[in-house]
Length: 529
Ligand code: NAD
Image (cartoon, rainbow, N blue to C red; front, side, top):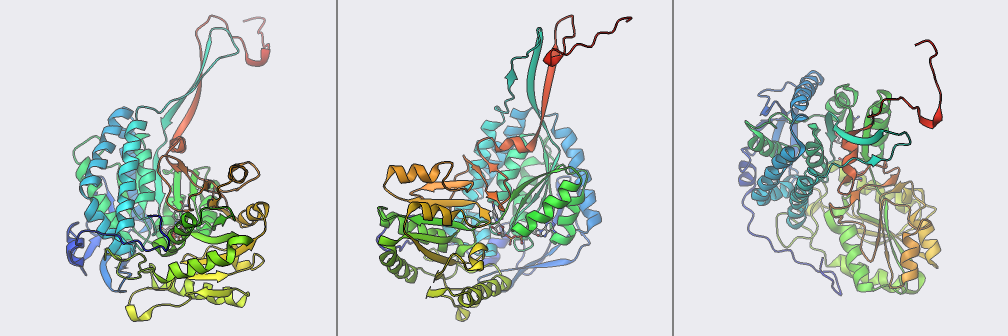
């Protein structure tokens, strides 16, 4: 986002085409019906689970209907994914990387088409939708390099003529449960890495954004058809209660990557923990930006508006709490309210729009409930707070409240563009307030003071998985490991060494001597052997 006195960013995009053209680019008819289940490199023709209608959040109208999977059909999909895994794990990792390279190329070619579909079905603005596809391309590039760097350690053995080493093997079928708000990128952080690690995939996307996963699945089929990767990508669209629970219980699925609310995380940990499987949990956030008196305020303003209003407040990393040091607090809030008033709300496919709709009627209800609760608990409304019914669809106003930290609602993630503002005297108080909530995903401090910056990043600073200085809470790059602490789940995805969660580690001792010395000097000698 450009640095500006008042935040007024115009995003220019090319003409986007009509809604039926956007769908037809992936062989989907407006108002038509499509299969939401795929295994063995092809869609299942007539899955027998209930039909699911997907909506355009900018109008509330139905886009298409999706045939979902029953629990029994999910079982057949996992068995097929497990068979594909047994073949795929034998393919050398650099050759697995070559398939991911081709996938990255295919996503590059279809970037505009995919972004238009994301914007249509999810409601995020085109610039952010393009960024989401770019994230998939970037993680594919990262994964291709990784396919030659799945390194294990070599340790010096304490025993003579012994070698001690560690190696990484493919794990199995990875179940990817994804949220509506990053329908392509976050699952992509998982599958691109899992596939070079030698795993196969069963993807259960959000029921709010099924068409995006169907479009991606079509690309997987095109790229992997008649290759050694055929069948490694599988799809089960359906409700959490049916397809989600089927994945959680399936003994053929040793790893669940789950993105969603903290409540989902609790359910996944219990179900997966019970059968001794693993989970990568990427859950809700309640992210704060703290602005000190010595901060560059233009920079802070841009970051806060993008963080709180961007994606209509529907990012896990959205800025939900703003902590202002007393000296700049009043003036900053006034500038913020003026900046909010300039935000263009409208059709996400229109290049002039900065904020699109919420995802659903339920999300609008949650926004209204949130506003009412904040007021009831003593929050003072500074901006917004209303729905925009005249536009059709699920539009609300970006909203600012002056809140107090003892209001219980401030500890909750309301998945909407609502920002709580607090003021503090000192950096210590800002850190304490940042860390006071159950979630621990993302955080940002704005300061020009080196001591304050380092204090924020120190062991006694921000307790979040992501801690930034002079950068906002949202907009992470794929190169770092992404995830959060505490109720956010502790999982890590994407770059750095997040790949290790998608493989099984094996420690190997090789004795190339003629004696059998035991570790720690233990003696165990047989006398009459
Ligand atoms: P959600 O929890 O409602 O749903 C997420 C997914 O879980 C969906 O696919 C849903 O069908 C599935 N699900 C629901 N119940 C299930 C069950 N019993 N068993 C298995 N699967 C089940 O979340 P949402 O509304 O789609 O997304 C918003 C939430 O996701 C927010 O809390 C946001 O912060 C979080 N999120 C976190 C990250 C992160 O990386 N930390 C990224 C994106 C979104």
